[in-house]
Image (cartoon, rainbow, N blue to C red; front, side, top):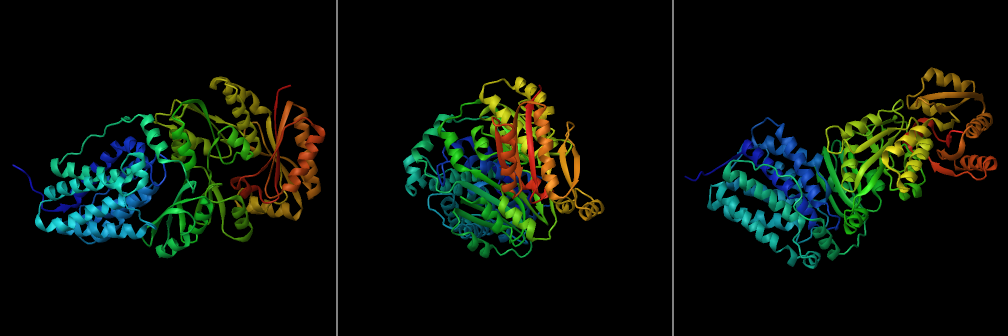
Length: 602
């Protein structure tokens, strides 16, 4: 006998959402393969899968039973975990659904249809330029069908089954509404993902069972490349940029207006307390800077869509060794590009707002704030998830990963890197190396690793050579003032005030154990300038084939003077000049300069 379901309560909705998440996750590879709009970057399936996985994880720990409570849990998890254009649209749909069912313990078919229609309407309003032939079209057609037919039946099984067929018809029509889809010979990936979501709900409602999640790819990479090549490669805005802000009384409409004109695919979703922004732009840091004026930054990301597209077009040829470091590694941009160095950003905290070093805020804006605000500045290690994300992406392209980080005796960053591999498939493929240094001297070690990788040296030999070079890598740091060390909490107020009164200027270094050491202390700026140079040159004379890097915090003139002096003594030496990352500049302060030396044992 067929079972009829006349109402949808919180528990049924919860299990339906988990079932739909599994359905979307199963389709991840296929959705990536047909992703050509709004950008052919092959990640719609991943974005929807990550979003739905976040929703499923969040709803599983919700032990309430009413539809209101479960829908609130779904909406909050979607907002926190949404990724990409399609993920943001899903998050807004569930946010709208939660608002529409507020105060209800269960729903009839009619109430459900009305709530869905309201959710879709709010989703339309959240998108700057809704495009027909995409996920939003299928959402609208599905919602309209529910509204037109809900009053004819009280059975959710019949209604949802029939509405699924309507959604499939709408999906099949998307190529006729969007030229880029017709040209590539595919339906819209986001729209198909939404149909998968409905399919998961129907499967559960009809059977009462949640289909087991299947793993593994079922679409060949060459199919993906074929679709994307047909779609073309014009990507006017480079970065898929997202952030989550929290606060009180956030004005979404005002925020939306402020962001218009800074890119395309703009979506601003959420509530007065929590808002997620999605936009394709060429200036992510400007978006983050603007968003920070509306609330506290909680999460951010900026994916390079042009690079993603390029990687897909050129196929998935696995290379030997990927090179990873953290953002305290100071290197010229051309070296980072040359050796394809992946950088995991350290976290910067200004008051209650957090930024990813050099990604969410650029150096100029950071140092302007450092000089103009009384907010407390601090730093923290990247979360393990940041490392996991980078490693997971690299394992699709490389056989091994070499991850080199600042000293474990200075920061917990390297521990975060280890935690980022724990229990994951990449655990035995990622080699984590403690440089026992940071800044420009870390940069010299990372550049040396890049050279060895380029030469085709095997990973075990590279690590052995780095271990031999590590004791012969030093940095000598000239501090013109102690106030930034005091402000960041790295120097006690008493010692700092005493040193300031006596006009004492320290030369700091990082010893062979990877700990900060005071190498010298002199009186006056000129003496500390000369002492820093003297110590760096003395160390360089004790090693073979020295290489140098001069890192500075808004002190380019002094850095260039140091470079001239180094080349006077070592005319054939390689000497980089780099701007020090804000994650270190916050402690050493404006005007500080470090001379790094790397050599071989004599």
